[in-house]
Amino acid sequence: MTRHTAETDLALYASGDLPVWRKLAAAWHVRGCEECRGLVETFRLDRDGLHQAADRLPEDIDWDQLSAEMTANIHVGLAAGECVTPRAPKVEVLAWWRPAAAAAGIVVLVAGAWWLNVPQSDTETIAHALQSMFTGQRGTAAQTPAQEDRGPMVRSSSAGVELVENGGRLGIEQSGLLPAMYSVSTQGSASARYVDQDTGQVTITAVYVQ
Amino acid sequence: MFSKFIPKSVPVLAAMLAWSAYGQSLNHKIDLPKDSPVGLLSADFGNSNVIARGGANQIEVNASLSLRNSSQKRIRSMTLMVYAQDGAAGGKGSVAVPTLDAAPGETFSIGIKTLLVRPLANGTPAVEVKLDGVLFDDLSFYGPDTLHSQRTMTVWELEAQRDRKYFKNLLETAGADALGKEMLASLARQGDRSRMGVQMVRGRATNVETDRELQFASLDIPESPIELSKGLARVAGNEARAPRFDIRNRSNRTVQHLEIGWLVKGQQGREFQAASVPGDVKLAPNQSGQMTQDATLRFDRPLAIESMSAFVASVEFSDGTQWVPSRSAIEQPRLRQVIEPSPEEQHLSQIYNKKGLQALIAELKKF
Image 1 (tube, chains in turn cyan, blue):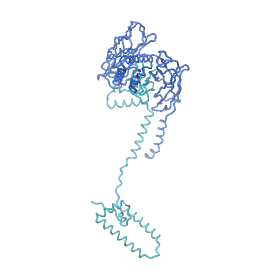
Image 2: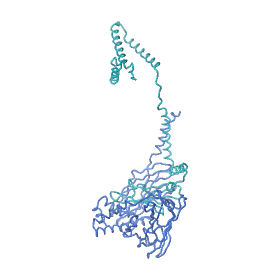
Image 3: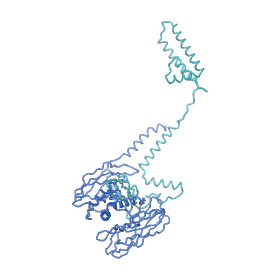
Image 4: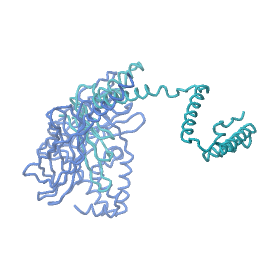
């Protein structure tokens, strides 16, 4: 079914007052729609009739007053039209966005506060406990946080060397370099060796249990 | 009410969050003794800062020290100690440069990139950098030696002398092409070597799985002053603990310290150097003894330990002199694949890799 151009647009089209794009659309429609073409013709005839009537008006008309009355009548007509035109139901597509945005903001703040204030070791322990609860399995030694160990711990890996002791951590790395080798000593130290790619200078970093 | 509350509280909470993440300045101190053989020319701690994280201060030290050799001897290596000045326990760190070779009056720089996480405490966090030791080309030493740097740096220097001599000899007897091939082989070995992250804790870790006793295979170096006759460790999953070695001093000098290399092979067949086992002993000539360590190694990745090997990496005699394996000893195929190259070999091979054969030959001719 062809959707007709609105009558207001047809009236404006008849008087040549439509903007360019809407005018083109209306012209395209009117060309193929006999009903709308008839309406446009009617509007044009009415307009011509008004022009002829205007020529017959007395010369002492107060045009300002007439203009004001016509404007008021148009407003009244539009308001009345609003009352009788059936309204399309307002679709509340984004009705949920406010609580969702608020919830997302709270999540971000809680995560940020957690990150800033809860030690990583505690986070790891909680994550490990939750994992154990859900899987029903005890973690392997590699998954078990080092903080469960009784004493200090040193660690060497491709990330460098690290000492964890008494709630403190000490890690040493070299800017932008991966260690060429790394190792631990059973007397309580970990070391990593870095080679400068340009000069060949070797730097060895280490951490020691006190 | 909900929507009215959120817009007002979000900026406040976000501001609190941003404030707590804001970095503070870091106090730092560089402590070089008055009679130190190195002088501090400048210290740049430009990007260092302190940020509150997880109930602790995260102290990032990004420093570059410019130093000058103010002694009359060539400095072959140097160790700086780094630690937090908050009085809390938490260990020390060090940054060492084993391939320095700074002539008298020469300037050089050392970069320190350290991350310390300390419990929150009153006052501005501070970090101190101290000189722990300087080793000269004649093997003389200067420094408080808090970290036993003298022993470590002497081993590095002996290995450096051994390897430079080997490569210079190769150049003289077999030519530059042979030296180039040797460097390529060294770089290939370094690239192929297996590595695995490892943790070390004193005593026994929490893993209570049933463990088993596994014997070390001894990689005997005939020239070594110490003979490894037997070695055992307890193994469970990807943990190995409590290494114990039976040793015998087969030299005619008293041994006071030794270091054993601990190699681990997983079921996938990859073997790597997992740890070193240093120990203070007092072994007279021909005397036997036992060396034990109450320590547990835990590997970062799941690893079913299939076998373990051990070799004597260095020995210190009672007069302070040290022994390291000769080049021919570490050229044994079995050791060659697993033993780590010396810092000097890595230094030389990188010069070859980056600058070419002529640059390497020029470097070898320096000393």
